Structures are given as structure tokens and as C-alpha cells.
Length: 230
Length: 100
Image (cartoon, rainbow over all chains, first blue to last red; front, side, top):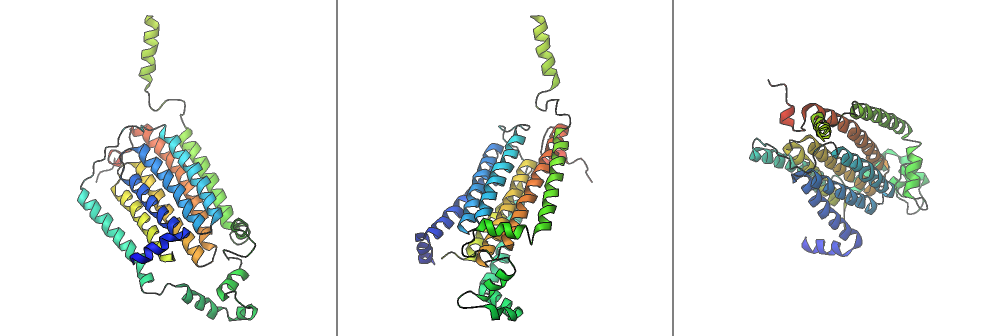
């Protein structure tokens, strides 16, 4: 077990995986545990940058770039913009009714989640071999096309235009082809949803933007009075 | 060698961190941060499955999750600003106006 860990640390992929996982888990723990909004937001942004690293290891280049642009660029910028409305420097006082109960519930649900993820792996029912066999059984006609070393499942995905890595075609290119053929309607729906969200955000946040949130109007009056006295 | 199970376990750990945050936080802004953590954990799982099964569908779902997260943040922050104007704080206990 320990030797396996050391051996995988020697490879580039293994080292990057463990590096990113440890840093991401640490940074997200800071996000969840910190009392200061500014620390929480900064560690969340850093964790998201490292998550795009996971995507680059996994060969999902386009997803990694989108993660950087949308999450770190847009969403975190939006959060930090909203931070100007709220009091960011003050520590958040949270009345937790009973810490022990919350941690018990959180720990229990985390344990259940890990078991849910681990059970199929442990029982060896979730391996790629079985899936390939399944697809082979369902698509016997594709067996005819197959020549040499390309696997049958890969051939099936190639015929249906969902294969992740084809020789000579980059990740961004295949993502584009599939996004504008198989997933065209969800793409359009997502575009409409983003438009609706934009309008909703503008209307919710933009109403009565001219009166200040943080300073009350009496402060301005005082300044006026001081000026008058002079 | 790093397998699919490694990625799924890391994803489950990050998801649990987000879940603990959702259960534990009383501030609405911090609840939003915990939700983002959970969404990112799911994205890792989708990308890993997409890579190990050589199937782009997982990445597509991750894209749509990112789009949904972006619109969620846009609407949610608008609501937060309105709430802050009205109540002067983002604490869930202060916002509880309907007591049974």
C-alpha cells in the first residue's frame, strides 16, 4: 500500500494528482471553516485554480480552460464585486446551536457518501472491462468494422461521436463538434438560461442603486451641517 | 498508477467538505461558497469518468454544470444584495421571520 503510494508519487501524473488533491482539500477546508469572508473567498478561488489542474491531468483541456475563465475569472470576480456591498473585514459571528450535533451529522453523511462511492469499486463491479463487454453485447454489428487494436467500445463511441481522444483531433475540437451536434439543444437552453439569469441579476441588484447601502443618509446630512457652520 | 477510484475518492472528500459547510454555516454568503465547493467536486468526478471511459459525455455535463453555477451565482447574489438592503445582515437566524 505504502510502496504503491511512493511508486505513484514518482510518476508525473501521480505526483500532480496527490499535490493537487492535498492542496485542494486543504484550501476548501479553509473556505468552509474560516470566520473571515475574505480568507474564505481567496482560498475558494485558489482551490478552483487547482481543480482546473485536475482537468488538465485528465486530458480535458477545454474544460480546464473554461473552469479558469468562468469560475476563477467570472464567478469569483462577481463574488468579490458583491463583497463591496457587504462588510468584508469584520469576522462573522455564527451562533451554532450545537457543534457536536452538526459535526456528527456532517461526519455521518460524509461517511455514507464515501461508502456509496467506494462500494462499487470494492465489489469490482465498476471496471471498464465489464462496460466494454456490455457495449460489445449490445452492438454486435459494430464488431465487423473493427480492425486490429482499436477497442470495440472505442469504435462504438467513435461511431456515435462521443469519443474523448481520437488521434490527430484535439480535445477542444472534439468538444466543439459534439457540443454543436449532439448537445445543440441543451446548449441553446443554457444560453437562454444565462440570459434570464443576467436580466434577473441586473433587476435584483440594480433597483434603487442610487441610495447607498453602507452609509446612512444622516451621515451626509452631518457633513452638510458641518459645512454650513464653517 | 492513478485510477478512477482515486479521483472518485478525492471528489467524494471535497463533496463532503462542502456538505459539512452547508450544514455548519449560518451566513448566506458562506453557504454559497460551500455550494460552489460541492459543484466543483462533482465536476472532478465527471471529468475523471469521462477520461477513464473515453467518453465525452461527462465533460459535456461538467460544462452545463458550470453554466448552471454561473447563473445561480448571478441570481443568488442579486437576492443577497436585496436581503442585505432589507435586513442589514446575511445571517440565517436574523432572516427567520416565520416562526412556527
